Length: 253
Length: 255
Ligand SMILES: Nc1ncnc2c1ncn2[C@@H]1O[C@H](COP(=O)(O)OP(=O)(O)OP(=O)(O)O)[C@@H](O)[C@H]1O
Ligand SMILES: [Mg+2]
Image (cartoon, rainbow over all chains, first blue to last red; front, side, top):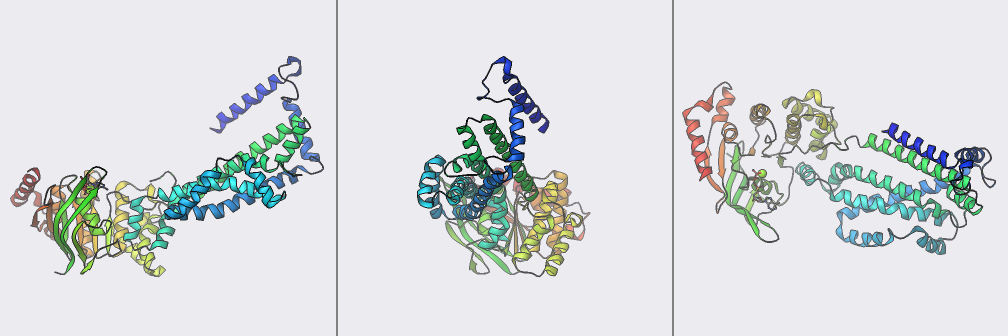
């Protein structure tokens, strides 16, 4: 599978290469910079940073926000989602709010967050947190509802009380869905990264893209996009790896 | 004989959107200690419904059901259930699955080990104790499920067509095993099946069920299972009495 994907990528890069050959005049250099120039910009970015900050401090700033937001989302949305899977009344309240917020464009409520929390790092992290919350919450509510009835009955006939029912059956049954929720949430948080670094940021990969586009430096814009894209794939691969270790029974009866 | 469960004229209905399905009608029966009761009947006659009611999964619409003179209201550990599907927990190993009951009842680790080893050896799965359950065959899974129930030492074991999904060869072996376990552990079993031979060869008592105003139409006390315990080689299926009884029950079911 990775081999086929590699071929797809080689083809894309090849097409990119062709359409940017200067003498062919297919697209302007500002619209699509040449692969070689993008690569050189990347090396330059790695060596000398951007806007007096190193490459790694930009990466660190973005990932710091992302991870903090995702961790906060996991430790709040998992317990709340599982609880809501149990208690219909609480679910009604929380789901009503989640259903309203989830489809909102992040930039729209970011403005509100800035009013409430200021333009510092907090509002950025909270923005990413809100984006990551819904997928995890929804997956957890669903997970509890999908627990096999016969598994519940089995453990009850073995003498389990409510808490034991949760630890021996409901929680492990829910783990595959919880993981899927976390992976979706991470993806959503990545898509929100640029929005989160739009206002009053001075670092972060999203901010680099915005700043470079303002200066019509399309090479750095491309570098930024590729860096975000590749890190998102790597993180998803990492989560998948952990998932396969933890949930070794996934897909098995 | 000590009476463990008393079922007093119960009926169970399922309320559907349009109509009410009368799944179980006016059933009375007792389960006494050490009995091996077989509930025999065609598909849809309410066998599983009866078993679920005894387990405490369903509350009857009419009538009462008692265990040791207490009304049954929820499932609990005194009534173990073996389902048609093994229902093992795939996140636990074979050993951990069998250990759940003793663990939930706060046994010491040493006791848990002893209990698990005992019942895993009874179902001949000792060497699989660290296996993942989804790596086992259907028959092996069902044996783990049986060991899991036995390990909890329930007063009554309820089994709903536990061998229904197995091939006939494995099924025969499982029948011999379950008879052996029942005898060895002095268990009390209620066993649901739609296989007449299975019912006759395992039970000490058979209840024949049918759809209708009175779900249980007849009961028979039988002794083939004890005879097979004393002499496993005896070929009771070829006996005239066995064949006659089988024909009688068949005609009852076909009425
Ligand atoms: N959860 C349910 N909701 C509605 N109707 C049900 C439900 N469970 C069973 N029934 C109906 O009740 C009747 C008895 O079902 P039951 O499962 O007890 O039969 P059974 O004897 O166990 O059959 P089988 O041998 O096929 O397992 C059937 O008509 C069935 O359709
Ligand atoms: Mg049934």
